[in-house]
Length: 101
View 1 (cartoon, rainbow, N blue to C red):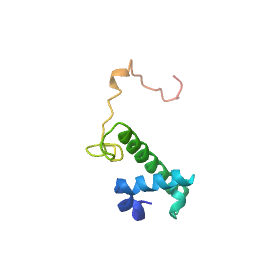
View 2: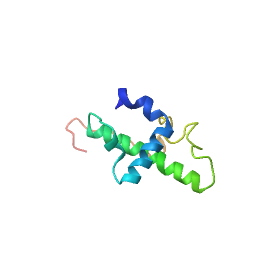
View 3: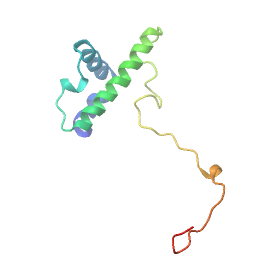
View 4: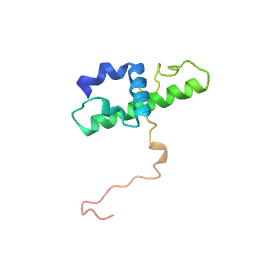
């Protein structure tokens, strides 16, 4: 999926069209395209579902159909950083060489 579908998947209207067709025909979006692995099929189905639901919500709310997809939005790569767990560390201990603590 990475090499073949990336240009297709980056265009949100393509995913919306697949989602709409799959919904209309009662099948999965990946049934319309031939992908090499089940994981690639699942990823395409998930992307279509995420875009489809967002577009439907936007239209129901009276917004532009593709509002909210830019600027770190729904389908962009996750660029968030996770908080440090340091604040949750109560104490540290050294594990003895025999492994019993």
